[in-house]
Length: 164
Ligand code: ADP
Image (cartoon, rainbow, N blue to C red; front, side):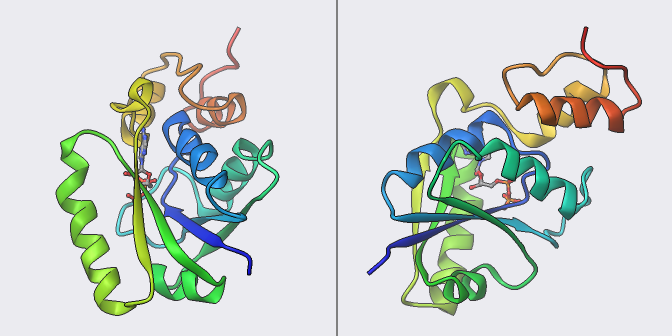
């Protein structure tokens, strides 16, 4: 039986922190599906189509990883793709309470599905999409923290020129 895991998120935009979680999760399962959420309760810089394109580009080196956008509940989408495991990344303690609440409600909604947490890689434990957006909006370089395509797209969004 193929073991599938589901890694959902907003990915606005995908960062090296997210990519490291995907790289580490995909070796634990036969198939990893990264899910880009349409509606997240957050207003996003990138549309779902743009976020999905950037995620696809960021994980194209991982052969057993597929990327979809989804607008249903996380557990519903996990069931639809036959995933019994939801992957989430944990950074500093600040993530813990929120992530525990989400894992609890997901367990309540769907008992068969487990949430598996991977600790953020040390280099990226303070990296967040919101920090990247703020830094990029000020015109500073985010090279090495996001993919080259993401950096290019952010510079376009903020009306900045290409990196020299
Ligand atoms: P959401 O809106 O669902 O929280 P995010 O795109 O912000 O979506 O995050 C998706 C998942 O990736 C979350 O579990 C989050 O904690 C995790 N994550 C975010 N940034 C990092 C990082 N730098 N390192 C590891 N995990 C991260």
